[in-house]
Figure 1 (cartoon, rainbow, N blue to C red):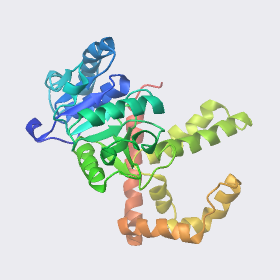
Figure 2 (figure 1 turned 45 degrees about the vertical axis):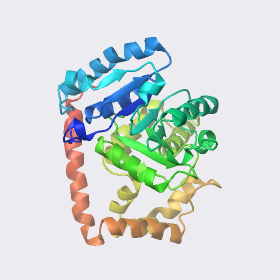
Figure 3 (figure 1 turned 90 degrees about the horizontal axis):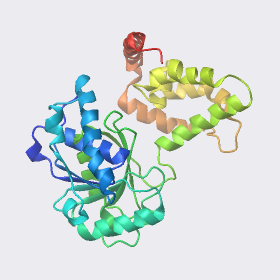
Figure 4 (figure 1 turned 90 degrees about the vertical axis):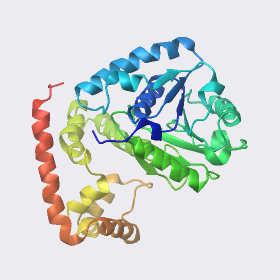
Length: 320
């Protein structure tokens, strides 16, 4: 586990609004990184039950050496606060996790905007709703952002930062710094899109998997194997652009020349990516900034070593 905090004193208070599973998971993320965390929920029973749940998760994390401090030390940084105004006092960031409806978001963001310090970032964990749907009428709408986690965020570090049209660039920079320092892996969207990035990629994969199953090409178990014993082994440490960059001797452009037509024919949809030269060139150029063509063989060898290590790990895991 990489170190994320030199001392708790350097971490400002974080408010977690909504103490369900995602809220509790966020509490673990920020407390593990050294932040004082105030956990708030309108349901007192939910909030009161959260400490036992979090303590159990912290003990599990400690067993796998995924904490820098003792579980009780991390737990001591989390305080349940029934009063919203008190929970938001002097915080640097508010992580909202209430119901996934526009009405619920409008209500809680209106109250948070009125109570939180004017320089505090107001972030929503929403999976699908763009921030423009529930922040447009707020006086402090420029400090509002979507910070969509991958569940559970204390184990899967990706968080998608998506601005509304009026989100200030400085807010995006500060949010990126806070989540990075907390041990997360933030990705930044340039503008709003339904489902953000992860859900759209997942939707595309699920769409194809369901179609293959519905049309009788394979069982659900074998389709799952395509991912867990195939694509996912590479994708556990590199993404699809880097994957195809390493799967052709001359990188992305070479891959497109070799396999672009086959990909077009496989998708055969009016909404399918058409593998245009200009679009491929842009990705290829971005990859070349990360990895020169001369380095592809070495990077491919590195990938193979990682696959060997992952295979050895899977052999030790239970067959379930």
